[in-house]
Image (spheres, rainbow, N blue to C red):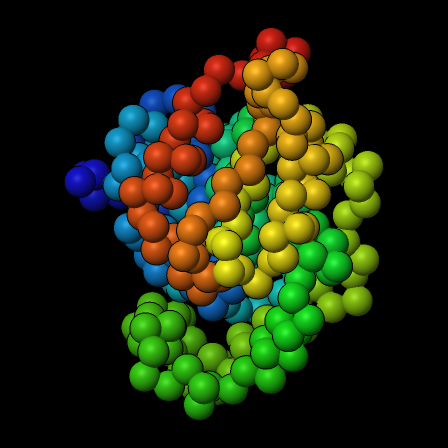
Length: 273
């Protein structure tokens, strides 16, 4: 187990953005959770192993966990701006990033648009283009009502932690998640090819993201080759068995092993800094 984390609130873009700092050493690892989750719900089981030999910075996004909401839609560009502000507040110049779902979209945005901030990027259960999402995703998320999550750990966590601990504000969050990045076109193949940081793309074998989309991402990053002949690329793909989107971290030991092995691997000579 890790020692008690250092916690605080960063004043960023009108938010009081909650963060935790666990462990010490190495390039900090930034954890970015998915929609309707928070630090504890998304990463609580894997965080101790991740922080055993490195510093880990975890944060709650706008309207999630202990971070307040503001009069602003939820979207990748805005959340990425918040993360940049948090790193500036903490005086952190470069991180490894591990983002899941919404957090994966933000991690991908940072890797493409702010490459100077990212050493390695782990993008989990997040599509880079709408074509990668299963057709039922948008309808299911867009129609979420508080009654649908009554009695769930997500409702309980929201009411226990939020600065706005009532069902009316929870419904506002669900509405914002329903409109998340609506109308955006995603990233091009060239955008993915051009990412400077080594990437680990992870997906469940029964995820909201299509498996062929994950394979295409890996191919664009130089994967799906005969590594015995040409070498193993710095960027990797992991498919977690028996895993859905909602339970993306359920295989805790497997997730930790895959993530830590990727982070601890030497940087390619051409990208060392």
